[in-house]
Each structure stands twice: as C-alpha cells, then as structure tokens.
Length: 257
Image (cartoon, rainbow, N blue to C red; front, side, top):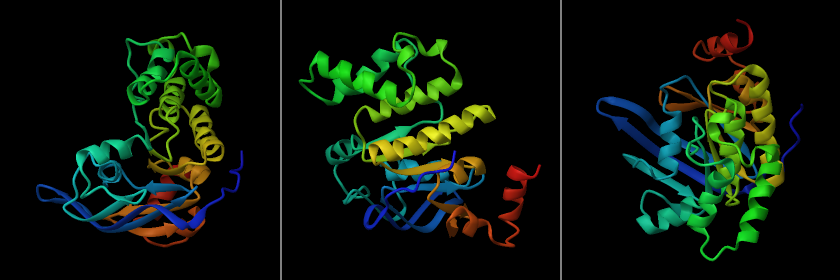
C-alpha cells in the first residue's frame, strides 16, 4: 500500500538534537550529531546494528545522559530538566519496544488498562473501557481483548504493544526496530500500521530500523547513521542516490540478495 502524504509542519520542530556525543569506554557511538523531527513527520533513523540507533532513543527519552550537546523534546531540554519534569514529559512520548514489553501475567485488556490507571488519576471504568476498545480497534485486534500475550502471534504482540503506547495519546512515537523478528507479510502489516497511526493520531515519530523495506514504506525522511554521524539525510531515493561504498552494500543486501 502506497504511503499517504503526511501533513508535516516544518515550522514546528518537536525534537531538536544539536552536537550530541555519546561514548562507552573507548568507543565513540555518537560523534556530534544534529537532527530535527518535525510535527507530523515519520523520520526513519537507519543504520547497521551497533551504530547507536537505539542509544539515540534512550538519549531522547532521558534514559541515558549525553556526554555533550543538547536534546530538546517538545520544548524541554532533556539534558537539564528535573527528574519530575522528565517523568511528565515521558507521558507525552510513546515507546514501541522491540520485544513489545507486555506483561505476560496480564490479559490484553489489563495490559492496556495499566498505563491508564497509573497515569490518569480519577479515570472512570467507563472511560477505561472506551479507551481500551478504541486502541484495540485502531490496531485491528478487538477480538484479542481477553487473551494472554502467550496466545498471540509475534505480529499481534507488536500491535498490542503499539496499542498500549497509543492509549495515552502521545504526541511523539519512538519505534525501536518495529519489524525485527517478523515474517515479511507481518512486517508489511506493521509498516502499514505505523503509517495509520501517523494519520489517525497525528503523531510525530522516530523509527529506528535496519530494515530498508520498513524505511521505504514508513519514512517521510531518512537519516542514515554511519560512523557515529548522520552522513545522509533526505528522502529514501535521495539517501541511496550515492556511490558511497558504506551505503551501497546496505541497499544491495536488502533488495538484491
């Protein structure tokens, strides 16, 4: 399915990254990166395993501290704000983890209710039921409401993980390897869901992946992370219109092998 054109407001930067550096021991993972995420945009951060893509998400959410540089999220500098302010900010950010991060001892309903009860004091049972049913409908899995995570397929667990994130109506979505470990057909379904979330919830998203099909299907813009820096940023075709030997094998492996 061809991606619908998104309404992207380039005058509204929801994430602004400037001069960010991060090292672990003697390994420089990020070497002074700059990046903007605009309102309504799906931005794909593309790169090989171990290049710092997931580190970037942890820096944006304040789970890791930068060594240098600044990261502004919805007008807040996560490198300097208080822990309380950071916790409040995280409610406005949705995280779709690689392993879906569902509680195995809870039904789908209870998994979805958990963030609501935890973060919205005084919410009524009727409101909870309405929100749970709404997000399950959005991800196309209303029939799973009373099932346990162990009874779901990998693709279904991914969808429920996204639903649990959406239930708090986040302004920003952060997807960490959303198609990892899934079969090709399910990958396409997850990619289409990411686009549907963008259209239905008007989210701004960063999608971390090394899957070029995911990048091509979901990304309004692609940022390729190479050697600790964003070497190429643009549309999918712009990023891969190069003879750079670090980029070409990446494309060939995904689309030719």
